[in-house]
Amino acid sequence: MYRINSYFSDWKKIKKELVKYKKGEIIALYGEDSDKLFFLLKGTIRFTSITDDYEEYFFFDATNEGLFGEVEYVLNIPSITQSEVIDDCQCIVIPISKNRYLLDHDLKFQKFVSKVLAKKYNDMRFIAMNTETYSLDVRLIKYLLSDSSVEIINNITNISKTLKCSYRQLLRVLKDFCSKGWIKHLPQKGKYRIINRKAMQQAINNGSNANEFKEDIYHEKV
Picture (cartoon, one colour):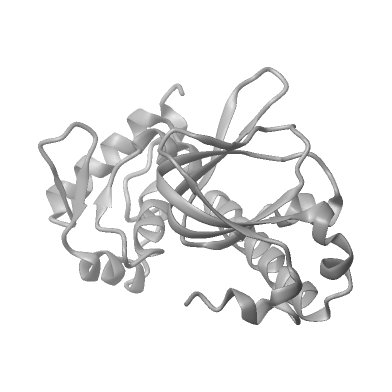
């Protein structure tokens, strides 16, 4: 159904199992030994990383995004992120040690892993480049337009970490977007609905930049 078998030369020989995880469950702890590859079939998983002083940094939420655990597999290192189930999910879990020989010698799978890693690297590059180049207003538009299936905006704290701004700065820009009629503030605290993607895209197409958007990120203490 998900064509996962197409990423392997001989899917039948691969030892695997379908595992269901409940909301709030930790799939992998940051720094623990990792011996599994995961294909996310259903649900949402949040990936974060922990610094040496135990501060948590948000990476991204994965929703049916396919493979994860590939960095640990390739480098043979402990988990570089902590993964928590946000919505009940189902994963196909592939034990690495039990399949290491097959995986390492499967050219088809290796090409697939290379594409996954290259895409993630490029996505991270894009986010970093946008942070340095564009105002917060433009970064938020690009973020909201990056996934056409997303209608509700929530997890404001995590979005602020992704866009590298303060919570207050993000709320101010969201308020401005509401006044423009691009989004709508919902009754639930911290939730918004996207109502005019076309207008946001038009703002980008018209060459909206830091000079047009009000950006005072450097004038507020974070």
